[in-house]
Length: 189
Image 1 (cartoon, one colour):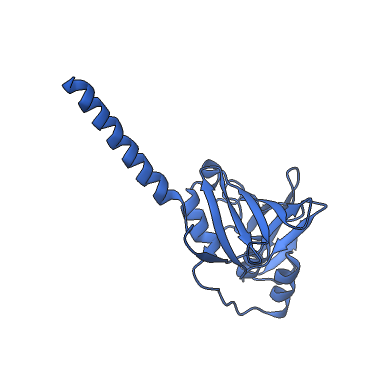
Image 2 (cartoon, rainbow, N blue to C red):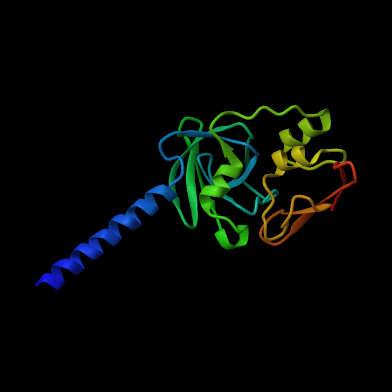
């Protein structure tokens, strides 16, 4: 009887610990955040979209960009991704995430791609054009490319210091953005 009670207390304690861990891994469910970078999505209608840590920069029909600086509300989070709404909750994005490929947890990733306050960037004309269109152009800065295309997937671009960043255009094709010694785009291929 005593062992059974101890076992129940132990199991209850474990459940409480797991509950606290899970509660801490649900990021920013109690407030709004702002996107630091464009989020490339694809949708079959005007209110529900899918996005990915792979930043599909040209997924095809239904490609919609959630612009950098957009206020979002994260409504659900799990190990496999998160859901956020924007436009006052009128639009919903299901965002897939792969922690092993990104070599970080979802909370760290959300910290990378969102902020508590809108981010103000000073960009050149070519950076502004690329950010507005969600594309990389010759002459853009590294920061401009990241805001336009999103944070590069770590399994394709393990270091932001490399001369080439690889982005997924869609599930089957990649796009390489080459930088010169001054940190500006020299080629997009």
